[in-house]
Length: 292
Image (cartoon, rainbow, N blue to C red; front, side):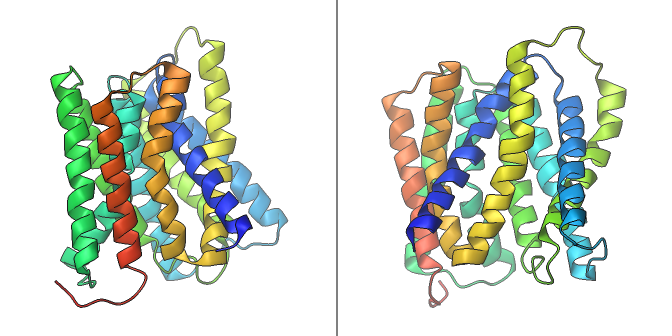
């Protein structure tokens, strides 16, 4: 793996992890469904406009079209929708750690439903990763974190895993930027009825929420997505996915820096276990291994 790929992976991990702390700042002023529907509409329009300027086509293959719908619904409407609702009560560090377990869930679903081979190292990584999440969640729930919010985050991580599995092979045939933009439009349209029927535009929006909203449009929304696709094209999906093991660390650190969230020794132990589990799973998938 060359230096450029390493820098791209680090940038992706930092940007992806920063979405949780900035989301918590936003939902303090702006309701979650309004936030996401508007954000996806703007981000999607920017991505589609750039795609058209680069000569990409609206015409997608049937597989790409299906992936746009599934990814838009599962990642944007469900994963981010559930997390933004939960972030009204759940610390950003907790949401980041739960979401960071996505590679573990993908590996587990692939083994359970797609009959993908998992080595002994992969099984150990799955067990360690989920144990780390349970360790952190147990201490936080006993410390007063809303169990309903934790459940929403877990459901969101499952939806993201399904979206990731659905996107396999969708990048073939080009039009990646168009795919990114269209799946954001799908998320915006899916959340719009909830925003209109359940929420109202706030009377006052502070500068922190405004700046965090703009940041999410351009950084986690567009930049991180483009970096991810470029990284996958450069080093492959499996090697690129190893950078996910940095997300628990960055998520907890950024939440502490921006929001002043406390970090306990038990949190650090849990983060280390989750990171080790994700890394073990990714290492185990680099080469075929006998099923277990």
